[in-house]
Every structure is written in C-alpha cells, then in structure tokens.
Length: 239
Image (cartoon, rainbow, N blue to C red):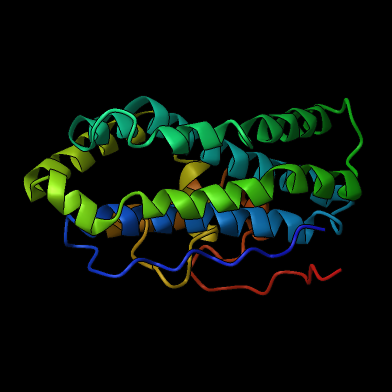
C-alpha cells in the first residue's frame, strides 16, 4: 500500500515577495496534489456500495487537476521562465513528467471504465495503480520546486517581469478550469499550513463552499479538509 507522503516544506521567504513567490506558490500547489493522492490511497481499500461513484469522481478530479497543472507548465509557464533562465533550464522537469504521466493516464482509463460500468471497482487494484505513479511523481514535485530558487530568479528577472509572468499565466490557467470541480478540490485538498492558497478572493471562496461544491458534494467527503477549511482525519493507511 502506498505510504502517506509527507508534504513539501514551504520554501523560506514571503508570498508577497516576487522572488520568493514562484517557489512558495509551486510548493503550495504541489501539496494539494500530495494531499489528494494521500486521500485516494487512504480511502481506496475502504469504499464500497454507494461510496464508489463519488470516490471515483474525486479521484478523477485529483488526477485531472494534476494533468492540468503539468500541461500548463509544459505549454506556457516553463517557456515564459526560460526566456530569461535560458533554453533547457527546465528541460529535466519536463522529462520527469514522462516517468509518471503514462501511469496516471492508465489509472484514469481504469477509473473511467469503473465510472461507466465497464469495470468493477477493486480497492486492491486501485492501490496498485496509485503505487505505479505516486512515488516518482512525489519525487518530481519536490525537485521542481528547487528549480525556482529565489537566488537564481533574482539573477535573471526583475520583480515586474515575474509579476507580469504570473499575471499572464493565471489568465491562461483560469480560462479552462471547471469551477464546479477545480475549486472544491482545492478547498478539500488544501494544505492547512498555507490557508492563503489558492489566493482566491473571499467572495469566490464563499461561492466555492456554498455553491460550486453542491453539484458534486458527495465527492468532496474524501478530501483531507472539509469545505470550511478544517482538517479531517483520514482512515489509517498503515500496512
């Protein structure tokens, strides 16, 4: 059974400092994914009956959010950074995606077949799928944050350049997300140590809790946080 993976230590500095921001922001995002994967592993052997469908939906949301993040990195964010950092600076992190993304896609395919009634849910098989991608993915998530070292960024960017990159990136990132899945996922898989992430305006946080979460409410019960931002105890995933 995959172990509960520790969250990434948030890099030093201030979220408001643009040289510190990229690594801090990336670590906080990655911790959401780790929270989601840990929750998937914790619940996988226990769900049955009418819990299967919402758990499958939750798991597919976790994996699609990870995909969305990596697609944006490869097609938008890394190119923006490499204009100053130099071509190839982030090539290794792109290559690491190939070591676990195919396994995530296999997991998604199986879950979609379970969702569509073509396969019967099996908790042991679910854990096997998670184990096939999780360790390499977690290693990658840690290493990727290190590439955004504040001292390196300070040598290659001005604060305004980094701010402009973040503004442009967020416009692209928010353009194709599903508010009924991405926002509730972010709420229930947040890191309690970074309650400011994602940096949503208060009205949108309230809308997430009381409106956007309603459509698939049964799915969010599997997150390690409730929709109000309170940590919950996950089932034990000890061997």
